[in-house]
Image (cartoon, rainbow, N blue to C red; front, side, top):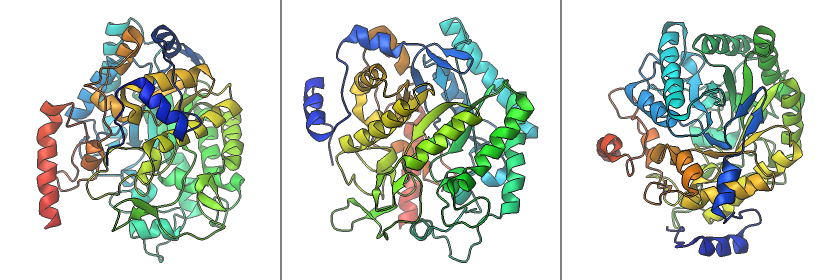
Length: 474
């Protein structure tokens, strides 16, 4: 279903004014360049501009967790791209926390491989832009929890998510004792990251992974569930341990999922996404209105962010939704990946949701810099929307995810031209997501990238993945 049919910014502006409250645009190119080029203070570091590349997994590591050839290529392209915040992708803290067989995994045996990659990123960036003093590269430390490969580890039972993930009701959630041990595993991972040269870490608290699921574990008994104080206990303990070890030497960041919503399925007649049947008040999830879990309630989210800030978090990346069970929430799209549902709403509504949530949070905490999400569907006009949000104080940093795969040097064009090249921007056709979901590869996972705009590398990979998919469907 085609939604993006705008030939001019005026056409998009008109539609956005009719459909949304917060999707608005800066039209002056010089002003746009100045806003996106604005420096941002993040802890002790002054970022060189207001643009970021989100943590984009390539699913292209080696089986032993090392960065692979395509991993290295991706970060070389990001390094030369001009964004002053390159959020290094999800990197497992231990082997059983990997989301797929080729997810990056930093352990004692491959610290040198990560040190080499990071050094290469810094060298490329410095050669092109003159300095790395204004560049931030947080490594995203993660445990994939319910989506771990090959054994799923859950924080609690949500029957709707259990149904989507085929999780048996008999499966025991991770124990309190195991969580206590896991806190030290996160600390050990931070220490390894420091040895590899990283001076910033991110605790991944989004997309339904373990730390994210803990945030919504209202029905879990014991010290890690129930009250908000308990549900944030794991994060508080890890931050305290990291700060006790490093002091101010490690910048603590967080990508936080701020609205879970509920799982969706395909309507067999319309092919649109429809929510699974849910009860009210909805007793699960994070950032959801219990009387209407299709809408957000940021009361607890704001309380938690205030605590995170007090505990030492200096940079927050605002995320929403879960790609495994409601992908339209986090990534408004033109075309779903094969086998998934069509957008159940106009994508502008999804973009507006992103801007509404991130804007409310940034304005509540104006001295905590936040990275905004949800821009890719706007294509060449993402810059205009980002500049408006920065000027109005609704976000400090403009983040790009999918578009960075197709257009890694978008920031250079933003600052030099005040516009993007229409033939290079992501069209949100979800080929990258399709590749991420394909496991019928000799290494257990197809690498993910942008087949339409990085054809020489990912065109053949897409062809192989589609053939494997068709064979699987027979």
